[in-house]
Length: 335
Ligand code: ADP
Ligand code: MG
Image 1: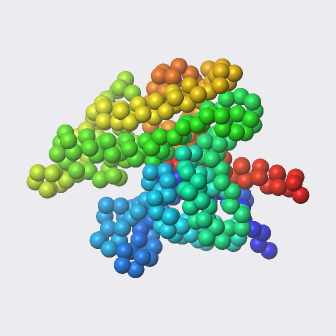
Image 2 (image 1 turned 180 degrees about the horizontal axis):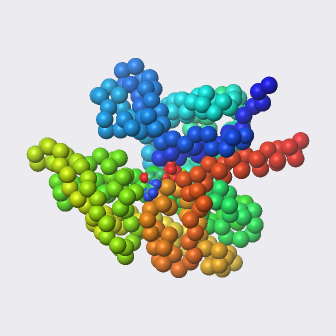
Image 3 (image 1 turned 45 degrees about the vertical axis):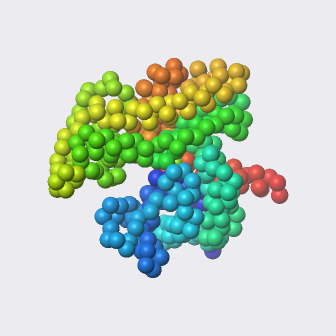
């Protein structure tokens, strides 16, 4: 007997995670799809497609349809979701027939964008689709007591966007989103290397540099990294050595933009809840929360405690899964 599956989806700009009620996280892959432009067929999805970035022949293009935090390309997103759900049902052996699905949407998304997400999931054959706002899912997944009348502050630093939410009594009290996240940091690194060394590097190299020697503040023991790219003058491959201090200067301004967004949101907090923030602090989630030194830097700038979520890359997916159980309870109670 197949019972209808219950699935939570974190439709992230960089990574998609799928959570099944019975098995936990069953898929965690980059939000990338490779398409053959002649046949319009999906050639690869997820990890396989990400490996193709910057390396494909002309007719195959890897696309990140959610890149800037919104569904830039609805058809491609729907195709990517379908391919990934198919993969999950095969690999993890969970039935994805007529599932009940809960999907988290970026808090800055418009109703048109939300509808696009809803339709993409429905077109896969979902029986019921619920949407949950990302900061709420992130906070639930980070173990915050969102139902209590206290200020739960969550800062989710993803690929395309960073979202700041204050949640109390299960609802959003204040929230802001900025289209600055890990991708922007990667771009800044690419620009820096181009300007200072006349060398072109790809997105994946830039991301590696960020993860290896990227720091959120200048007070750290300097480390260096050898990288390869294409010399813009000779056109030939070139190896250069970059330092963590120069990478810091390259990403500093984008980090400040994230900080400004957190500050602005804290300023919107009702005074009765402000005191909670001083005591409980804020929680950071998303891949960007793993940037070295970001926790100390934010704590220092904001003068409140900053905690790293237990599994920052999985918080939203775990939160959608828990929200799924809550919805079930509510629906059963309503019957
Ligand atoms: P999204 O929810 O938008 O899909 P994620 O929360 O999955 O985004 O985070 C992806 C981003 O986190 C990427 O930009 C990635 O480069 C970045 N990231 C992942 N690990 C690290 C790390 N160790 N240090 C810095 N950035 C990281
Ligand atoms: Mg996310």
